[in-house]
Length: 190
Image 1 (cartoon, helix red, strand yellow):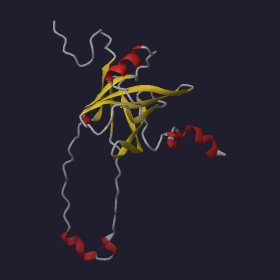
Image 2: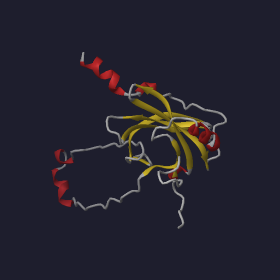
Image 3: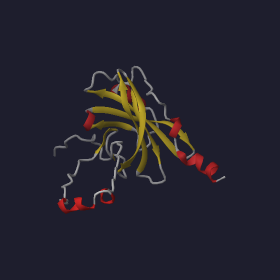
Image 4: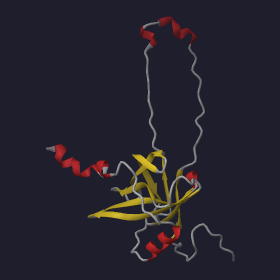
């Protein structure tokens, strides 16, 4: 009985397509027109993904009650093998207004993206920045050598390893304009 109650809370899970959708003819200019004609939510807009040198559009694709779902569409990229209009991932709202479930496609076969992998994304309160950890796998292996060779530990030394801080990965909003009437990321001269 408990399993049946938890199933609706599982999110998209199997609802995320295994292969990315494609919207032909969708580029940055046509996305601006679409967004200008829509009743925008704070998450919707045009975003820049610096790590991939890619301009993205985020738009609502479904709303079930108060659970908002968005698709992330590539609008322009330095990678000429991906066509503008290719969906690169999905976002879904969570119980916290700044936490999102993010699916990004992780494999590419020529022009097709496949294998969505899930991670948690964090946005700021005004939805102008989204950061996330890249989906990754970690494998830990432990072997208890003491059980087999008790004298080996005389030669064992332990030394600390410096862990480098990594810059956050994420998106930066560039459209619609900011609350002061200036476009995001433009220098304002006085």
